[in-house]
Image (cartoon, rainbow, N blue to C red; front, side, top):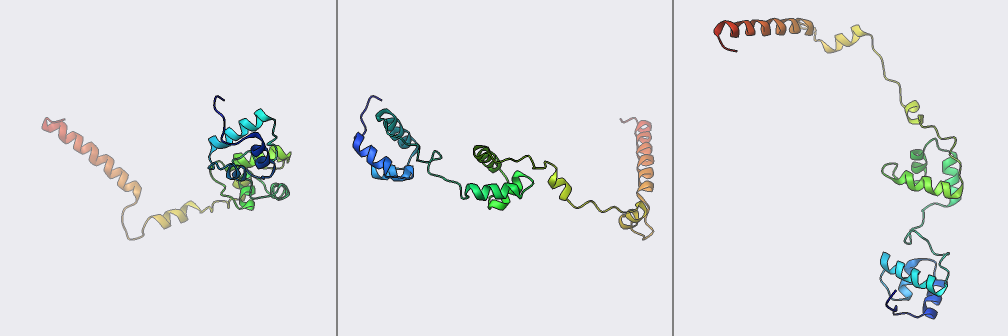
Length: 170
């Protein structure tokens, strides 16, 4: 660190000891809240032997749930997505990774999670007899069935290729 900060060791010590977040530390030291400023203050605190252990490491963001709430949500859930829903978070994106890391830090077991729980909860598909399906799909107005259309299309394709051969095209 070739330059000196605009605060001294005593000011840094007072700011860090009296704060609970990096935002508070930076405000006292008259810095804007920015990642590089946090890094600068942290490096000078390390150099001067000032502990920053009590300050959050996630840039001032703390989870919106307590460890006990997380334990209860995980215990009553079958998956990470279910846990996220119980905690009021969106179950999409990378939220489950953050939750998984936090659970690992707190030593919360997830052995009861079932990777197939969502598939089991899904309502089974409704099955219909084939005759009922055809009666729903094919109108009963006397029009030809799809099998008749296929036969005609095949025969007209053969006739058109025969016509092209006889006309000298193709």
